[in-house]
Image (tube, rainbow, N blue to C red):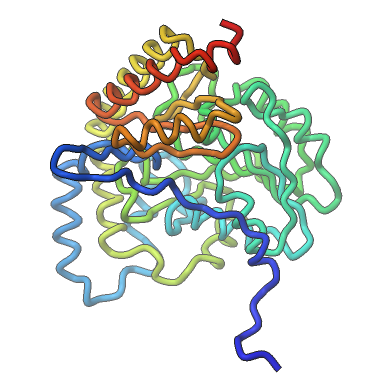
Amino acid sequence: MTDTPRLREALHTLPDYSRISAPPTGPDTHAFTLSANEIPGPPLPEILETAVQAAASANRYPDISCADLTAELARTFDVPASHVATGTGSTGVLLQLLHATTDPGDEVIYAWRSFEAYPILTRIRGADPVEVPLSDERHDLDAMVAAISPRTRLIIVCNPNNPSGTAVHRQELCAFLDAVPSDVLVVLDEAYREFVTDPDVPDGLELYRNRPNVAVLRTFSKAYGLAGLRVGFAVAHDKVAKALRQTAVPFGITRIGQDAAVAALRADNAMRLRVQSLVRERERVVEKLTAQGWQLPRTQANFVWLRLDDRTSELTESCVRQGLSVRSFAGEGVRVTIGDPEANDLFLKVTANFHRSPALRRRSGQ
């Protein structure tokens, strides 16, 4: 007889999903968070005002159907309202997708390394993850097609990819979608879509329209600056969208989150200006890093990826000592969010000193 409740054995296999501890703070130090891909700066004033007004009704349950938000999403993206499903951030919607498509023992294919939540959510569901290695920091779509088996129920394409920032182009993605069996759902996870400047990277909403087995995943956590409110959505054909609504957590999105997301959609022009400014800052950071001698994959997101292998912890610790938290993947590399110029300049100072070290020059063949 046990003295504690029995829990699932699968819990012991789940990887951690946590960002690096915040750097130390004090009267003479500053701490900058460059580990979570958040937008620097507070929500736009009109969005913040809407959220504060919504908080006045916090004693009431939110609209379980998210009707106003669904209608606004349908209008903004020119899709039928019946094709829209919402959830608690894009991560929450992804879990709904897994509930809707997989039973224990089914397979979920995704590139690796990619978004950290993929293996966690897949295993929580009881499905089996099939991780296809990146090739040159990019999705290997041919290998992903080759990995499809009779047990495959879901394929995730993170575009742009997190943490490498690389993006799949239109021609290769269309060929991939044409090769996937029609009874396998393909999820285009486009959390960073708004930061894309490469015209060859397709908007998933263009591709889903005549493909019933394609769903597009988006979030308000990144470009819209509402990470703390946990609002995400998917656009998919009727059968899939209905299944997502069936598997949603009831009352999962608060009234504050719903109203703020509607306000964010209506402030689209202001959001785009913020994104353009951040993209310019991304280009400046990439240019400086390249001048320092770093070889970077071409990022289309709001972060950069430094492949460091066995020196990953060394750069991470150098950043922490300077008051910077970055996302470190042990033995692989470091993902660094594009923050405000002050934070970025401090990071560039760290990388300049690090890249000049004799050990790294030997490793890079310099």
